[in-house]
Length: 255
Image (cartoon, rainbow, N blue to C red; front, side):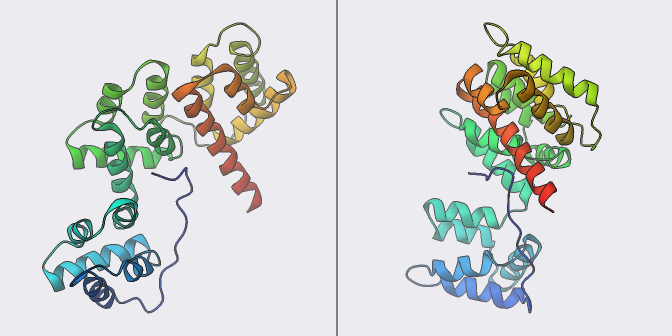
């Protein structure tokens, strides 16, 4: 499963030798059994760029694709983790999205985790990578496996239309907070489109002000209101967006 937004940071390994790493990984897979500890010790402590060099060195020295060898030797969650480590971020996201969509049922949580936590540039790269890797439109596949307002939220996220400036329009923030309140807590029933318009389009700094104003108006945290007003996948989607924005804002203010 893709992590919510925070994909972590790995610094470059000092004295990096891709040929040596490739040989160690090959030895770890050779013979009966697989030395999983050696594989994860190497790959988890290399940057994405360094892992790609290990892939190249492995192919040159062994004559096989490292990814294919790992898939044949490993199983279960460990295989998923290691395969994910070997993929560039957009390729892994596309891979996860495809797995979430294909087959019986859809893993909605995976769709939400990825699409709610990626930047505009990352979303565009994922869309292009998905098309290249799978020969299909990501939006078409998402629409084919989802429905209703949840589908509309995902499509909105796929347009990569969020404002990424830092500008806060104070008057608009107040109006947005009022619109969300009136669409939910203020009356019977919920107008989800109002939530979509604000949560999927406005920039993070603007949304912080919206959330502050919303609490003044309603006496509730925005996440509490989402839990009260919505349910199922739609609730999860809006909560993920709100929680991820809080995560980003907390990180930016602590730097």
